[in-house]
Image (tube, rainbow over all chains, first blue to last red; front, side):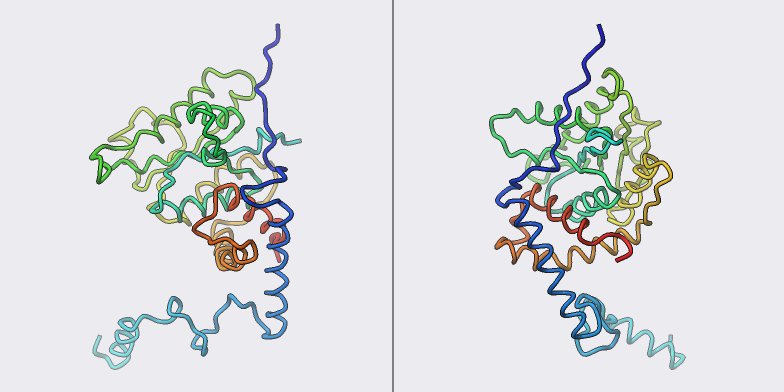
Length: 79
Length: 207
């Protein structure tokens, strides 16, 4: 007698996902995307991108002070 | 045609805050490669015995990603955790002793340091074992490499591109949670998984 294959459960189409419905999650993704696209259209760039040296440069992307000091020292021939 | 079994990827890793960066990047990479991440966190059902739940998920997944990097002793209990090696053993056992599609199981074993497994779990030599150095981009690269072999002739983006997309998702996560009225730290695994999935559907490659 042929052995039965293992039972396979479909998990990807669950209608309720944790505390939300799948529709709520899809709506949230679309709403954020549309908001970002509207902002991008207005500003000419994606809100997540940072202009180097720009006014809104974040701390994470800004050059580290020690690196700046080292670069200055190198340019003066002190490094 | 791929069945849910062919697309299922069982993720066996630590679920603590220290590992979260790697875990979330791995979940994202699995989805971005077109597969379905599964793990023990997906069912919060106190009625189902934990080991039974894990065995069921293993049975439903063709692929397994096993991170055995958490070998140090716990600060409080002074004991190491054995859950990851146990689940790796279950997965390899299913491949060895299971029938039909279970024989087609494929595993990726991850550790943080290259060749360290030889000192604490040398019997797994011969498996696909990669070191990620606790860096998400390296874990994503290893996951992508394993899953790419399953996609005949289908091109996948490189790990750097997947990480760029993951960073874009992370940047939007607070706003996504805001829309849902939840804090990012409060998200359950199934909620995060669904958010990632819908985000990927809405942001296909090349967009």
